[in-house]
Length: 324
Length: 187
View 1 (cartoon, helix red, strand yellow):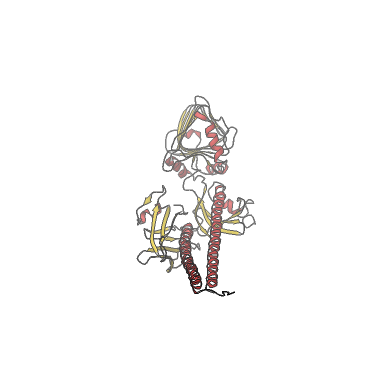
View 2 (spheres, each protein chain N blue to C red):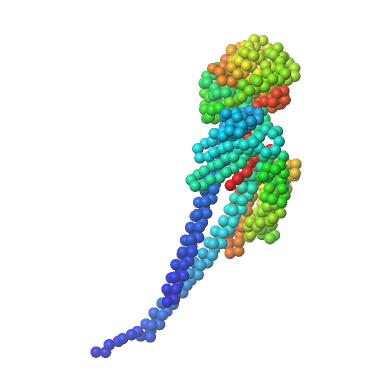
């Protein structure tokens, strides 16, 4: 009788242990699912925000592809498989520019939602020395180019373009010794297309000078309609917007941002030195360096250009909250 | 012919002794199993408590600094080695209500062996049996900042770390967890 009671008690204990193990396994499974959902949510948000167009306000995003407010496509955002993203206006004042992006991620039966406040980056541009509208072609540099990301604490990337970072890395490697990159420079990064057309409109709407203003002095807003060829030695600062191709046969030293919608060509014997950033539109080729090109990070020079005319910026996540 | 039936006294005694020995062994085994079950339950609860505390902190940190109106909400309001305070404008009304879940504080009280999460003005004990509880604060280069972090240095904090050790009565080894979580709010 006692032995039977002992056996029964042992069975009950074994059942309790098994139950405990089952509960722990279920908890672990739920935690794994929650962790996977959080990771998916963060990944989805990062992808959605990385794909947001560079610019100034978020109005185009909030009005949707049809550019009409109050329609079904307002705030529609492309998102990776397994998640959805939609933007809406942020509460409060309209300045600084921002939007609230709601991201919804699903894995199996699990679902999580997050609201993120998206704003423009503090630094103008894409955080890169070269901001291109498309991945550069191989063999673009046969002369000597040097990219220097400068500040080791917050280095600029060598280049940014709407392409996979691996493809951009491969381009850098493929250019070989013709392209020298300083050690403190950050690696290439994927970025949206620079909004050069809208920037050109804004330049024209602001007080600006012509190419004759390319001379030593303070920061100036310069607009050139059509191609610009520099055959002598020129120096300037501020924002140089060339609505065409920029060709440097002589010497051009510039502090700030140079924009060339038709690309940059530096034939043999020419030299282009930029303390700041170089933004190029889609052209064939967008970049052809047979002479010399040097682009160095100069946050002050870019800030001076930004003070002349607000420059476009990438979108970034300012803060976020998990909704459920 | 004389036949023998039944058991001799000696045989009976030996049989009883063997039976008692087996029963004693079974009883001891059951006792050990019972103690193991209790210990496993306590261990499981302790591990769960530590894990839940980490998950709660992670979610608090993820939402700290939420500021849809750009009103200047600071994610980290206080940063001590035994506690911290976080803020968020969750309802988007432009301010942080100190008596709501927009103000979250964490407090380690080693004297009372308790870790508490304060939601607004309400204190919720998260873990008992706390024998180790320490917060660390890291800057953008993942270098530690001295705690308590001075108010002017709070914006430099980009990540925080909690190391928690629980030792409920009945356990010989503590349950330990360390969480490092980055503040999502951009400076």
